[in-house]
Image (tube, protein in one colour):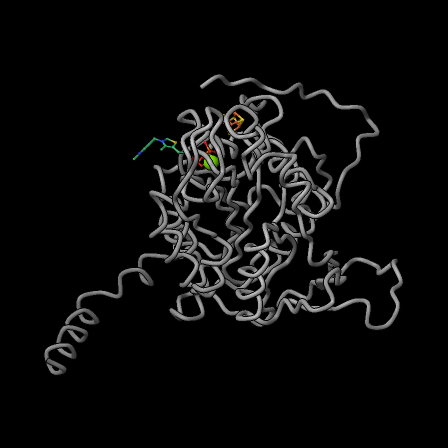
Length: 354
Ligand SMILES: Cc1ncc(C[n+]2csc(CCOP(=O)(O)OP(=O)(O)O)c2C)c(N)n1
Ligand code: SF4
Ligand SMILES: [Mg+2]
């Protein structure tokens, strides 16, 4: 793959975050995606979130599968850990990494093909196990990298660039994640960074499995009339249910709101999700209500975006498995290998149990 380095020289007044890093410290190589691809806007949003949240780059592990979307981790967080896995297998590699070292922020980046076709089994199990991760699907309704075949998220009746109609029922990864027990579920649009950035931030501060389905138009193969994943279509059918601000414990609250206008959701780490309702009847703490709402709105041709569901008291896989807090690579031989006597005692207990 082409590798282009970005110039390192910065103006002396370039803004720095609390760690002394500039946004450049969170960027990666220059993108080789098509100009205007939605995926590049998502990369920019991730850079902005990590800069704003003062995340130490070496504390992030970014993992992906195969596809244009899965290539993007090369274009952000160049100083973080990265693993470009095989097609559809990112969730299991991420789960293994997270179990070995709980101290990192796990960022899974995938595509609709990667997650809803070949990787759907892996996607489902990562969601239902409560792996502590931010899982971003860059959803364009096609296999961009292999030249624009319909993916499993393409809507029934939508048309390919050559006019072929898709007759298959779409898979909605948001609906699936809700059904499978994900504890932070959101949908956004790569063309709306005002909405997208806080949703990614909230997911990064969430404990448990967080899914973000981001509609991300493929300008080369799926941005025409007849597509339901084009910039124009999404702008016309976008129904935002709420507006999110993420307030960190260190932040001062500057905005003032009328009583009842705002819902405050405190997460495990003390961060506060400030949710302003745009749809009066919508409750993001009601999983079943969210599933029904999505179906109803989808039938009307609307694309529901915003924070769709959150359980701020959620737990995650390490708690369920009662695993050791120390990353495995920091344990010594004594802890990792308890010795022959312990092994013999364990075997004996199993024989007795049989
Ligand atoms: C095992 C395997 N099967 C098929 C492929 C071919 N392939 C590469 S990327 C891709 C689909 C990518 O689509 P998506 O995840 O939606 O990413 P996009 O390019 O649209 O961002 C396919 C089928 C592959 N690389 N490996
Ligand atoms: S083919 Fe589509 S998804 Fe891939 S880089 Fe180009 S616009 Fe983006
Ligand atoms: Mg795709």
